Length: 211
Image 1 (spheres, helix red, strand yellow):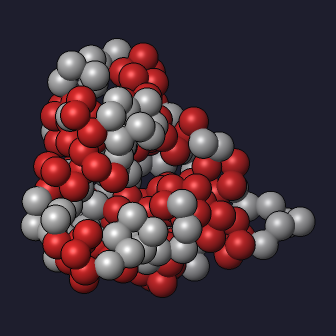
Image 2 (image 1 turned 45 degrees about the vertical axis):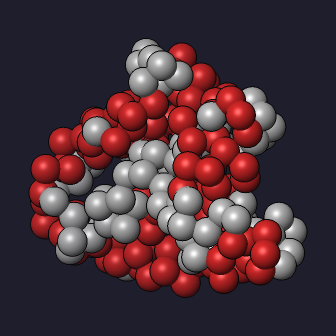
């Protein structure tokens, strides 16, 4: 399989530290992200999700206005939003309670299993599944996903487990642009940041000789 070079990484993510080359290549090899097409789509998504490999933990320090914009059903008015504004731990325990294998708000699971890694892994059930795949106890030690190699490996596992390699493959009977949008939706649950993801994808394809 082709290996990502330092020059290629810098062309896609100029703010990324060069030390990421080893973890990224190891993760891509492990999870079959082994063609330029797959690599370009993967790099584009992790670039957006992690702010060019610089943010490995979810930022939940939201203002009231931002809470209302992100979770309009949970925060229908200013008074409700103010109770959680700029309180990351309380917010995580509220919005992630009873979801993704988490317990109720009092369990603390929402904060314990908040998003971490290059494609932010969220929720107890996702951590448990990734634990099995990686052989790392991410249930007892979810903070390991803030380290480069586990962060990259967890992103590779998520990518492979959701069938994203196949979506990234060139198919003469499919629209590659539509497939990339589908990849973005499977990662994010919607189209948030789509323009930014596409911009990274274009840079990655050029860097890897696809454009």
